[in-house]
Amino acid sequence: MIADDDLTAALTALRAVGRRSSVARSLQGDVEQRLLQSIVDATASLFDAEASSIALFESDPDRLEFRVAAGAHGAGAIGLVVKPSEGIAGFVFSTGQGLAMTDVASDPRFDREAAERTGYVPRSIATVPLLDDEGSIGVLQVLDKRGSPSFSLRDMELLAIFAKQATTAIKATRVQRDSVRLLQEVLNQIGDGAMTEEQVETLVTEATRGLDEESETPFWHLVEHIAVLRGLGERELSLVSSILEVVARQAQRARRRA
Amino acid sequence: MTGLDLPAWSEPFTNIPSLARQLRLQGISRDWAWGGATGAGIKVGIVDSGLEASHPRLAGRVVQSVAVELEDGEPQVVPDDGQDLYGHGTACGGIIVGLAPDVELVSVRVLGADLRGKGAAFAAGLEWAIEQGIRVLNLSLSSKSDSLLPVFHELVDRAYFKGQILVSAANNVPAPSYPSLFSSVVSVAAHGEPDPLRLYYNLAPPVEFGAWGVDVPVAWKDGGSTVATGNSFAAPHVAGMVALILSKHPDLTAFEVKTILAAIADNPRS
Image (cartoon, rainbow over all chains, first blue to last red; front, side, top):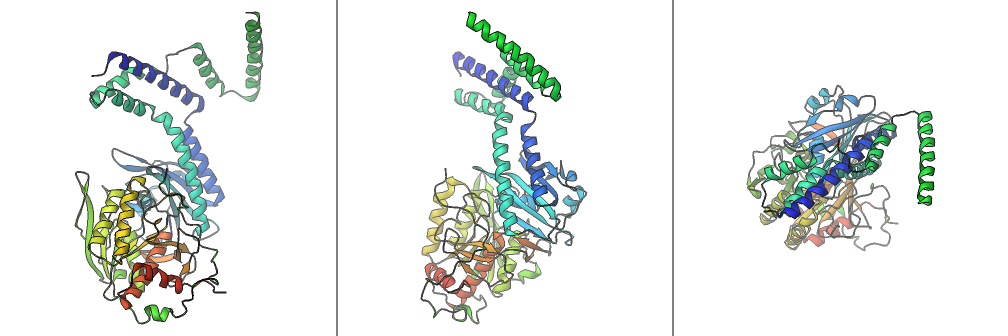
């Protein structure tokens, strides 16, 4: 079993990390979603495409979920779920090999069912994998360039660059999302395998409960206030900023006097 | 960290280098290399998503189908039912039969619902194909698992020394990919000239050859067809040429085959 001291230290660390990532989330909103959205927006605009979308791999059960989309015919793709063992998205995800296809709509067998669920059946599709060090984490897809019936090698190269950007963004923001999973791993390591998965799960749940309401120091309170202020207009923000300036000057004077 | 400090991906194959300084191999012409050849007597393995044996473009040339399955996490090679999950393997097989109509195709399926492109399954399928002595292997997929680097390295060397030709599509995204990075494979990227026999030799490795891979009309699943772009579709053009060469000159080594490919490449010579 884990020594009590180890456990207390782990739980303290766990609460601190959980609290910070929760504050970071409230400050920034869903960063991953926003970054991915900006990437598909840029992709659709650069390629002058009817649609651009990103699907990410999720497990239990294994699936590719279309998370963001852009372009005139993109919206229908959001929320679409496909199996990794099916279709172009599945193939590109599974092999890490990008490819493009044209004449898609003229072939009645070709992914038509999935395409129809999005409300738009494309003529051409380019798909590249989102690759990190471990392998594929999803795909980036572009449908129908308006100026051209198909995708060139240069297009594929550019798409790969966008995919790289998307992968970097996802990796950076998943640190937040995965903090609980990370802590479970830490606990498992401290416990040297002595705890069952359920026990670890219970501990983590217990340790992270109510984190959002609890404040560690007045400083984190302040951060949370600032998060709320983000919603204000320019004039209000400028006013708040002036007030804070006065407060900060007061604080400096007080420190000097002390 | 990757095990090899090399550029791992293909740039678009657009600047064709001149071979003025290269090779005094004028005696080797395309006619010498494969004139009159049909691919007869040569087995070509397609390590991919399966081959749809009944597809008209494969013209009944599929002689065997196996699949890698995971049993308790261990890859096993088992008989397969002649289907293709995605259409990709059939596309590659169709390109090869189009160039070398009398080859015998062997499907080695390493993709599937439970495999999801796992590098270990790919390695197991490749090892099986090498053990079977299948002369030409088309690898229009790759693994980026650094932990499998030594496994693939050992396998491709084994094939090279046995005179088997591994034709490997370069990755078209900036990431390491095995085995296309190894010098003992014939690595291929796409060019955009619509000619199945147009071949370019690249003087700046790791990608050594360029073949047609843009808007290629290909077979797809359920007896269908489509038009596809990617290095995936360039590699089988080279695999088809290699099958032609070997059916006419069966005793060639892997090194000799590569040299012949360079000698008959369409690069400008002045």
